[in-house]
Image 1: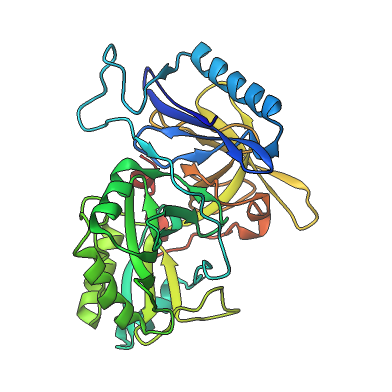
Image 2: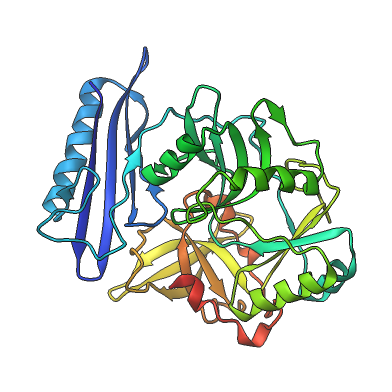
Length: 380
């Protein structure tokens, strides 16, 4: 018989949840899947038995996890914080909807973007054939609901299934939409910026403008608090205003898309119909060590697989301390034997060690305001 549990722990400034599932895979065995993270934030995967194993082994792993978490002060919540320790108003523990597993397929490949430098942006601002949108700082996801009413979300990068909160699942069910959309998940908010399918129609061969019109119709049926519409700037004046606004509030960056472009999966060797400009440098790095105080040491790898230490980064009080071997995203000014002024953005559970490469690091400041990069708001 399948089992699942939700746990919650609040100690000092730490406020986190942990979910575990013991699930039978018919004819193959049992799996133990786990998710953890700050309450109200994006859940990270920590599967203990991702591949089917005999029941006795899976049950032992599952029971061990629960015992360890209870010993560390976690409480069983059934999706809500215990009455003895009420949660702050507006931060209810997320209720996770158990959905039918979603498997990434060849039709669920994202259209990837090449990066352009700040001095290239002017051409996209003045060209009427290009649109502009905000580049969000979260995890690229595909969100779907099929003809059978099955819901799911997968990481566009890794193809791994992501959890859906009860609020998201209920909103999609209430709208009774059949769709496959592309967007960025930031906490429990989905910034949907493209639609690949709706109903029985495949929209990949339609232009960006046509897909945006279809997406607007879908947005009209979804709660804006969970699915806020993504603003699109079309005229030169609108694009310049958007650029100034994003730069002024230290957003991650801006994206430009050709108005007549179809949805083409993969990344072109150069250029492309979608491009991005980041306002600050960011890198995926691996945690080398956890320091005595709230900071971790970082490392990256060269093309021969040799590790290179690149300094320490502080873990803010509201952030969970990552463990050795975890991948994290870090904003920084530039690289000079170590990262200069690094800021921890958060975990990267959608990537592998292959992304933590030395060659990604920039040795000079970049972005629109290179000497005044302020990523603190993104890492708060």
